[in-house]
Image (cartoon, rainbow, N blue to C red; front, top):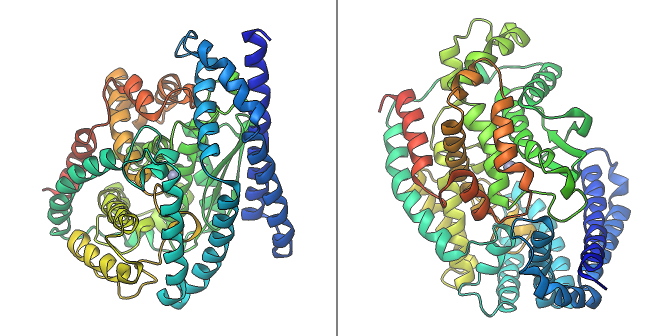
Length: 503
Ligand code: ZN
């Protein structure tokens, strides 16, 4: 076989693997939106079958032989070609899949299924003792998993690599230490000021209007409804079955406006990324975001840097007042702007504001490293959690439900790799927005006029269209001319919140 037909063969195999992933995603989307409870057992079986078929295709020795045969040609292909990128990514995924024995994967999944069920019971009961044995085993299995990657210098490395390829524990730890050092005093200064009045957000908002105003903003940002749709789900998410079918979900709450609206803008950011991938990457594993962190950078960019900016409020707030005349009609723009940017010490990560959010993430990241290193025992975790919340956020959880049990991550997946992307995303969002602002001098005025095409096109050209062709670090460097920096994010927070809180 010549190289062209070998590459075509590779593409066919990878597309089949990708199609199995997309088919699983359809089932998961349905389970989270419309499936009646009675479908759960069969759906679990059907999803497990698709996951197994995908794993078998990924582990096919013929795929390994093909990758070996293509290896010498890979270097002669242009680095930024889709073929070269596909080879790099397939090699990485194939090698990774070979490391972990299928029996171990099955054991891990079985255990995590039981752990997740225990957590669902334990959180409302405030019962850490119930999940403790499960979490102890999860930590143990996570350490065993990491041992299949003996070249890793830290047991969290294989997990971080899985979601944010190109980074490892040492690099993330260093960046987070620098960020934390700058954030803690900023949070102290802001929370020493009188708190913003957010009572205007805490009224009864008709859900139909919440639904349509969120979708209106989403479409203004450029979400293409011919290739997307919005549905309700208890935990908002974005999912993609192809470049032509990228869906978002939202959760409506009658008693708080910002929950649905800003989660819609957040998921829209994820969706714009997926819809912006170059059509020629369709069906290949390159059609998706470069990393968890890079994906989060786009949801945060649209939600926060655009959606919570003063310029956006100047444009969009009259529309909100029109949609909710009884609730917002007499509330001045300035009051609304301060309310949606209220900074406060809080217990729950997912409700946290832009400034304190990252402290929640860094606490989790540090604790999971300590668990994996064996420096912290699971039985001491709730107290370690409370101590870090006291020192970093100045609050103490009255219960484990609002403490160590609040996130599902450690209870449905291995410990490690799942949290850092949120904060890396925040940092990258500011760095990328900075670069876009330099390239588009009219950006603030555009946002004020409700013109988002220039920004979306710049992001498509510099980030979205590449999909997974480059690593997140490469994509960031190409888009901004710099490696990952703490400074643009801190500068953004200081400027915005310094003005809001006069500090
Ligand atoms: Zn997100």
